[in-house]
Image (cartoon, rainbow, N blue to C red; front, side, top):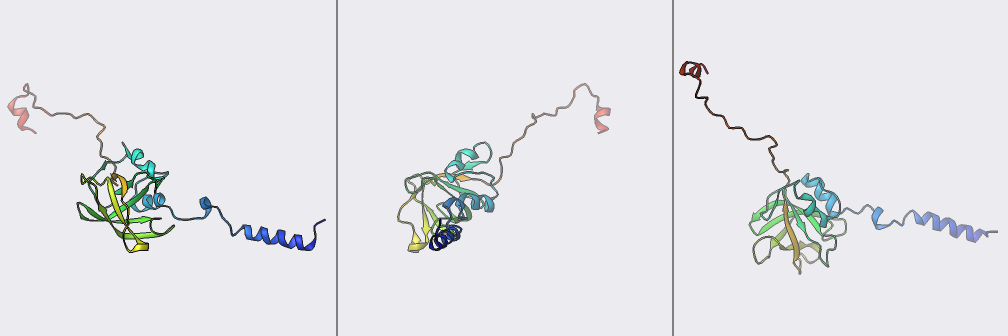
Length: 176
């Protein structure tokens, strides 16, 4: 038989269990769904998978463009990578990013500074604004490059070349 005190404790624990949620269901905004929403790039899964997923579906490169997504590679500090949308190109080596879950858990940051610090000027190593210190982060982050929002333009039809038919006389030609 359960005593009244034990019932009270059980009821309290049951009530408190609704306040405790696991990270997967806590509703914390992650970078990938946010980048998909603001960029229109329809890729899913962890950020570190976006670069390979984009191959053949979206153009990719190393030139910053407004609306493109900067894809950060996995690293010890970022095991699942990171993705952020370019909101403004300041120069070939500096952009402003709009992204989620960087400086603050689940937070959104708009128009924060990111600088290419790679030796080859190819955006393979990037420093990003970090809110808690009010400056660029102390470490650089490995990046894959940019995924461009416009899907690649493909022509599925064969190219046809128009030529004049030498057997057509001048009168027939002038009718057109």
